[in-house]
Amino acid sequence: MSERVYGFPPCFNEDSSVLILGSFPSVKSRKVDFYYGNRQNKFWKVLCSYFGESVPETVEGKRDFLARRNVALWDIVTECEIVGSQDSTIKNFKVADINSLLQNSKIRFIILNGSKAYEIFIKHFAEIDVPFKKLPSTSPANTRFDEKEWRDVLSTAFGGA
Image (cartoon, rainbow, N blue to C red; front, top):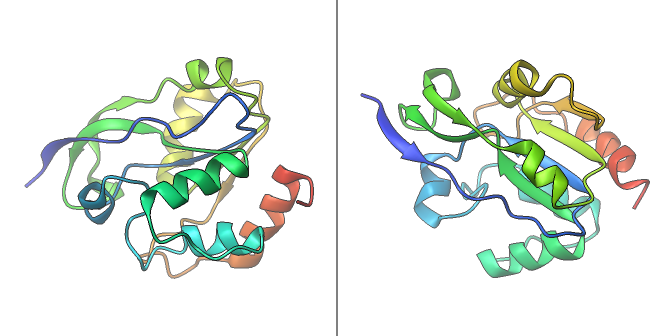
């Protein structure tokens, strides 16, 4: 049975230059009250290793990492009805105010983490004046995850950081 649940506010600051948009927080993420809280999700491992860092253990450590690396995190869906963590069950949702985030930061590239994030983003923001790229979901449920593809796009987004 689906229930109405709420996502997180965006994690960004005025110097954020790359926005990574997911679909909606998983049950495990909602439990720890921060993005990509499922330890089986490949997100933190891939992002931190790209910068040559280990994954911070705490939410505060992750926030600090994001701020130092000018990464913004948010989900395209801010509230919805969903069954568990299944993107395919998202309905009656509200879309994130991406334009407001862009006005309050230096975002110059957007990475869409997975098909659902991309599908909703295209429907609402296809005309956005910022380059964006869809990548395979870092979710443990995605058997087609490609770390090289992520690393290549991170290189483009961060200019070979």
